[in-house]
Length: 118
Image (cartoon, rainbow, N blue to C red; front, side, top):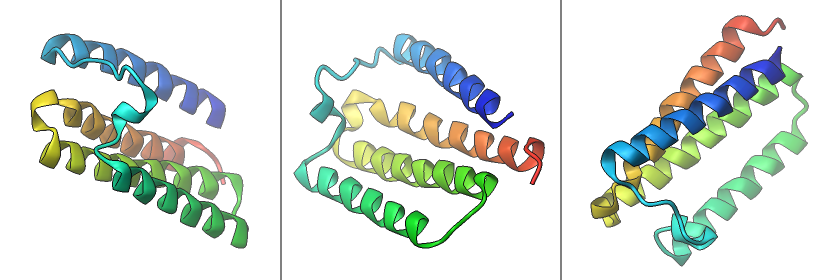
């Protein structure tokens, strides 16, 4: 059931991404590094990823809790990315997509809470 929720979430994310890019004329990233505001942004996300991995490996959680933590962590990353894009690259409008992903991660987290048995 968890895999089904995640697959549906990724499908919906792809559809929303395409519609928002078309509606607001938002360019796709030409390179991987284009998604970051600066080198310090890359370092911040790497540091957060390492802290998350250290936290998850130190404490043992069941599958449902780990999934919820993962989507909450992704949500935090997209909040940070969206805020930085809004503050420093407002003209490119990529913050719209980042904040949409925050909402979608919240919906997936709630779906996991409600529909996946303990």
